[in-house]
Amino acid sequence: MKKILIANRGEIAIRIMKTAHKMGIKTVAVYSEVDRNSPHIRYANEAVYIGESPSNQSYLLGDKIIETALELGVDAIHPGYGFLSENASFSEKVTKNGIIFIGPNAHAIRVMGSKLAAKKAVKNYDIPMVPGIDKAVTDVKEATQIAIKMGFPILIKASAGGGGKGMRVVEDEGNVADQMERAISEAESSFGDGSVFIEKYISSPRHIEIQIMADTHGNIIHLFERECSIQRRHQKVLEEAPSIILTPALREKMGQAAILVAKSCDYVGAGTVEFLLDDQNNFYFLEMNTRLQVEHPVTEFITGLDLVSLQIKIAKGEILNIKQEDIKMKGHAIELRVYAEDPLNDFLPSVGFLETYKPPSGNGIRVDDGFEEGMDIPIYYDPMLSKLISYGSTRSEAIQRMLFAIDNYHIKGVKTTLPFGKFVCQHEAFITGNFNTHFVKNYYSSKLLEGKMKENAKLAALIALKLYIEDKAQLRVATITS
Ligand code: ADP
Image (cartoon, rainbow, N blue to C red; front, side):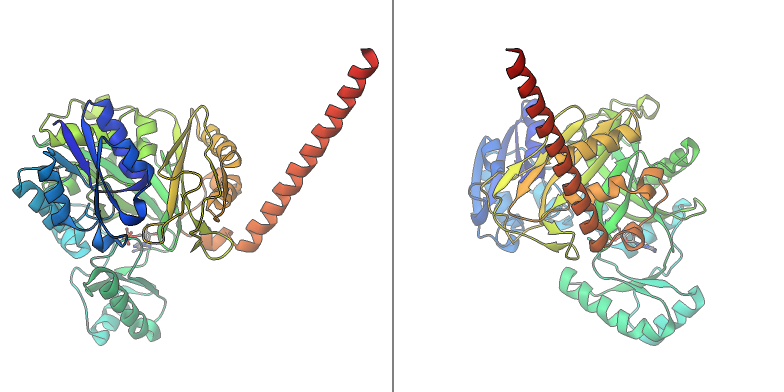
């Protein structure tokens, strides 16, 4: 493998290119109109313009991307996450054109891309599932009957769902019709597929996912868990590894269940099996993501492995050269997704001009980003600016380093989730590990954050004043003695 095209943009394109270059592989970037000056272009050995800014006229143009790859003599395509990464026919077309797709085959993507098909596939593998139905419902009466039998609250979910969309919690009988209508219309507009099904709503779950790696020779390993319970709108904001709640025995049990899920669809490459864990430590299979996850760096920190390098080696057909028993977990890592969103205004996107952009650096701090000072944040794509990752020998060291990194991350021009990250890392519930997916609902409000921010600003001003007075006193002493 000599040349890879990265069918993506921003931080993940750069992250993939870094490993490719380390492995002596050349890279090709693709870019849209608005990304003409983006850093991911400069990181690549070659860059090709593929179309207008909206993603359906650029980053989602599978045929055009394959054409470009063929013209430039590319050996493999890495799709990153989002865009074409979970598009089965893209994976199929890439392969048909004699190019390696760095990811699973079309069959696995197809099965796991549909939550209903995934449930069917894992049915014979003795994997605990969230209680629910395994077929789509369209009739409100039928849905209401199912819900009554299951017991409220229930969750209406889009089969093609992703990013927390098309999901509706229903507390009682009277709301089934209304919420079902909404879920169907959201699923249709977001995924072009209005199939919805019903699941029992697990009342206070934690989101725990297992990273797996499978080669083309039938070897599958797991790289432990990531806890992603800190979410807003059912979407992750802060992730960590390991989870404070897992015992070695439960970790192993969930790891083995994840391997079975991978087996159920003949999985190849890097994948993530998501579970919900209830307050009795029962876990339930939620879904599988058939790509590299946004939050993969926390796994890289605690295992010392480069996940992109493993993906590339697997795509080349190499045998996994690490055995399950050789993988050791060391230390603790936390990732904060730095979104251009306003945590004081319901996490609404806050795109605009990056007047100041100065990321932190230091021991145990990693920043994966794709922006620079003076750039506009485009409205066309996901508003994630960067990922801030901290690592420490213990969880509390990782938290301290995260707090240090947040304080030393200077962004002006847009609002970000940095203050929210600080709020979480200073919160008693997070520090003690006593939290679940309802952290935001239970402990967070913009008023509380505003109060904290004022408190912090006052503290910073007092420290500055103290330093000023001390400096002045020293100056005076120096003048007297000289
Ligand atoms: P998506 O594919 O849209 O990301 P997921 O099925 O992965 O949807 O779920 C996203 C989040 O929604 C979970 O992390 C959890 O917080 C919540 N969730 C999903 N299913 C349930 C459920 N049955 N009970 C309670 N919460 C759930």
